[in-house]
Image (cartoon, rainbow, N blue to C red; front, side):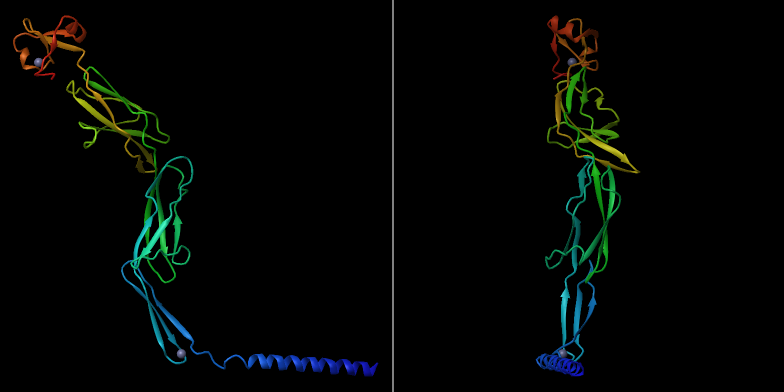
Length: 281
Ligand SMILES: [Zn+2]
Ligand SMILES: [Zn+2]
């Protein structure tokens, strides 16, 4: 028994010695000292200036610098989204003056306010991190859809518009122009899905567009304009004739100085009167 123990301890000693020798030989292939030990100091880039990464070797003093290009822009992939009951999360795009796109998580982080689901205005906070500092607050809107099926009809010199109800809208704004591709000016607001104008000059073609608005938590959002709807303004239901003339007129026509007889448009046409070129055109 004693001799067996001795043999085992001898064997263990040989194994131990062997492994120490292997470790020693492995160690001898590694250089005694690394060439350089770099220590970095970072002057962070901002939206106003370049940054600089300076590396100094603590062994030999060698110094290397690398410019971190200034942040050029912090933008959203889209400024707004049309409300559809779903969540909308725009991407944040950060670029530097060298044309590089910065990486989310490494160079910047993003915080979205609210759920970005309901109609309204949301703040997206971008914070620059890593080799960058500063940031920006961006605004993202969820807006109502533009009204569809806008129809314009005219009777008695007035125009009546109708359109389809827009989900989430609390009101509508009506715009008009005298040319289809002209400048549309704001005319009126309504909470309904129909609107009737004041009287226009008959025979004139008027164009209309409507947008939907939503008063959402003290910040209102609005849709894009609808497609245009045009209509020729209809003659008045009541026109005026004179004792001797063959024309029918609007109430304001100068030709009615001597006699002014009210008559329905239908009667005037049946009796052979035709439109006055001065007032009706
Ligand atoms: Zn060095
Ligand atoms: Zn006239």
